[in-house]
Image 1 (cartoon, helix red, strand yellow):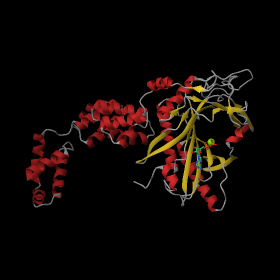
Image 2 (cartoon, protein in one colour):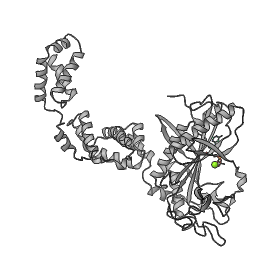
Image 3 (spheres, protein in one colour):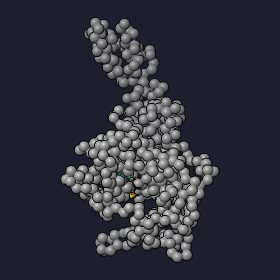
Image 4 (cartoon, helix red, strand yellow):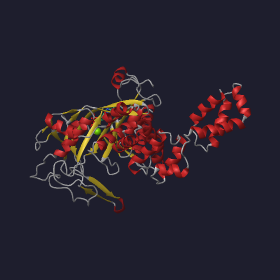
Length: 495
Ligand code: ADP
Ligand code: MG
């Protein structure tokens, strides 16, 4: 175990909790915008579908034209409640919508409806493994808000346009404490959060389309010093860029400090082509936004009963499922966590475990050989050419000693190529393990008779000589003997 202590304690004590970079401690906090998977907008009936002709899906309410009134979308609130329950947060019985005022071309109404002082989801934590180390990143809050439109820059004609289709799309903004201590930890957090929102089905998680956008707040400090000034890297929409951007930003900040400059609070953009971050604007403070409660929207009231109803409809959560895999199937915490990386993977595992009655062995094959093959071809478990039932069959044949582990690999190859009948493959390739002791004994005796030298050496106390005999027997049986059994038989006969 590395010398990691509880983050809060560590902040009090000024001890570093993560790897130092050139003597500096890296501090990261995340703000993530998860687009909620409702069919209509957060305060109107306009469609949220992606990819429509520009400006065909923004209605008068989304633009706050005079005389319109926003009406809260119940489905968006339910998704916020689901998220709160999934991460063990407090669901506020009463939360408030506020106007965040700013000017930008993609926000013609001049304000964004968001939540400020009292958000709907408060506290909670996201837990995950970084390597084999367990981490927990505390959440400050998750609040409901509407998205703005989009500026489209048509470089080839030197013009920009505004597409307001996205205006009013429901977002859940999820804000962490500055608990992360490395780019690797930040990516692991983001992946876990992505897993949670897609698992409970509140967000489609499509990063290219902008359904899951992460802003990384990054600062550095010498261990024991107060928090440094942060810069916020906007709109990281791939896990790969996320790590690159943070690493670049950390190096840049350390260089600045080492050169005697002070870090200015700023919002920066990552350019994947150059691998650099660049300041976009100096950062506004909350006071600049002139937040005030939106007079058009009443407080959002959520009764205990509503929370219970939402809870009752939710599928089993990854965390609970991982615990159940440990107690019910005897898996390690690590394996249980691996297998609950997605609902699809967990479902696959349970089906294979049921089909074979061999959960541990099924788990080993799924996290081992199958995962390796899928990764190699960049496939998800949903696209696995080997079904859970078929893998279960394979595992059954290993468990009942029909085939050895190495023969099982050959069977798996055939399954991967599209064959589906495990027993037929075993038969056609002649992979059946020799379980007939009579036949095996005959081979063992033959080999003993033909190898007097090895036998004499073994009897004289050279244990290695036995391996030579085992090898010969395996060869004579065309790999179908069970090595364990061969070993036992030999020792018995030569005793
Ligand atoms: P804003 O909404 O204006 O960006 P917040 O104070 O809500 O500001 O902080 C946003 C994010 O920045 C949070 O995730 C928080 O954990 C993180 N953060 C705050 N201070 C620091 C810091 N010194 N270094 C790194 N991250 C920080
Ligand atoms: Mg921010």
